[in-house]
Image 1 (cartoon, rainbow, N blue to C red):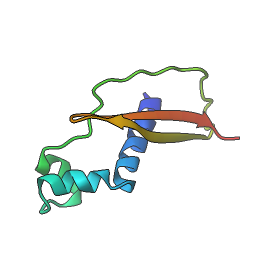
Image 2 (image 1 turned 45 degrees about the horizontal axis):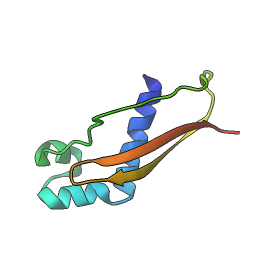
Image 3 (image 1 turned 60 degrees about the horizontal axis):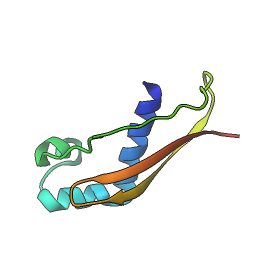
Length: 88
């Protein structure tokens, strides 16, 4: 479950840093405060499908890096690809 939590945090971080989150808010309303904006505008970045391939287990306290990128989009969905790699 910790792996998926790390992916969730990386997804949300990328959405905020790239301006996608702001575009989602501006599309609906601009009067919401950031801490309640998801409930206020009725948006939630939800994972509709997920495929995970585990190749090796991380050891306790081992450092890792999570990357997230937009792989594509259509009228309704934003498709993302994420990886988790051990740090050297």
